[in-house]
Amino acid sequence: MSNPDFEQLIDSPRAWLMAVVAFFACFLACGMQFTFGAFFKPMAEEFGASHASAATIFGITASLGNLMGIVSGTLGDRFGPRRVLMAGALILGAGLFMTSHIHRIQTAYATYGMCVGVGVSLTYVPVVAMVGGWFRERRTTALGITVSGIGAGTLVLVPLAALAIEHFGWRGAYRLASVIAAGGILTCAALAQAPPVGPLRVANRLRDVIRTRSFLTLYASSTLSSMAIFIPFVYLPVFAQVRGVNEVRAATLIGFIGASSVVGRLGLGALADRFEVLQLYKIMMFILASSFALWALPGGFASLALFAIVMGVAYGGWVVTLPAVLAEIFGVEGLGAVLGAVYSGGAVSAIVGTPLAGYLVDKTGSYLWPAAMAGGMSLMGFLVAWPLTRDSETADESAAA
Image (cartoon, rainbow, N blue to C red; front, side):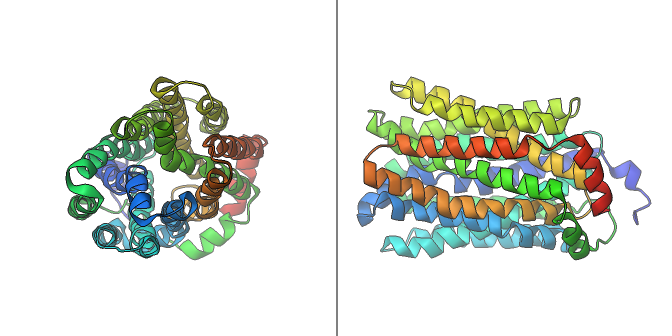
């Protein structure tokens, strides 16, 4: 390492400050992204859009948010997180503001879908990689704090978005969100600091990593699982309304996913510092797959809340253990680029999964098809990851060194 104070800085109070900064960056960027479930119905109704066409907005957002991760992660590795976060704040805020002025649904594909997706990518991957580089002994706990910002943001911002829509309409709510998101993330950018590591040959290292069996296995399993994760954020509130739940309570279900995901992120983060993180990753994937059976239970708000809680815990645990597994297998140098490469698989899941689920709803009139589709995809993700062992980790550490 080029920094002589490296050992003193790792796991230091400054490192924990970076985890807090990253928490709030994720809170704002990802929380704003997942408010789309509250905006879905009023936007679709105003423009007379089908479920599939409206869901495509979120599909583009999530797709670019994942696809651009390899770019934002590499930029963060090379130039530090501060400048990348500043760009993300401005693009995200501009996208939300422009969406408030659209006059047809297709325009939102660019203003919300593209701008918000790029803005989220320029925020999330760099801060996760930043925190991973600041820690060694308590890395998974710190990553748990970081990514719990996604769940906390979802818990707080989705119901607030629903209330803002009631009071100001969906256009006014988006204008308010643009100011909050841009201002908050710019503040995080001012506080962010690159981890104390030396210059990296990111391109060469990434080329070595993506050739390993462990990377390909994790890439395939995370791609399949992410398809399942995106679906409830779009369709669960609308399904709840079909079952007689009012709009604000229906939006609160997304908040339940966010709240329980915080439990998964923090709880699993602490456990992974004491137990085998790869096994915890597999367990979370199995629970995630199983949770979608709860979506089909008869009943109203209570049964859907049960699904949201179980799914949220598993989702939160999956989110925090995936970067920890990558850091354990491949190390923290160039972690942003490696994370971005893995997350790029989510682009396929987002752009295919949510519109396909909407197509099934349009054809069948049933919101149980998205649940069945999500459960099947996440089960396949678990089965793909199951053969991965510590022996393959050791072999791949040498291959990527």
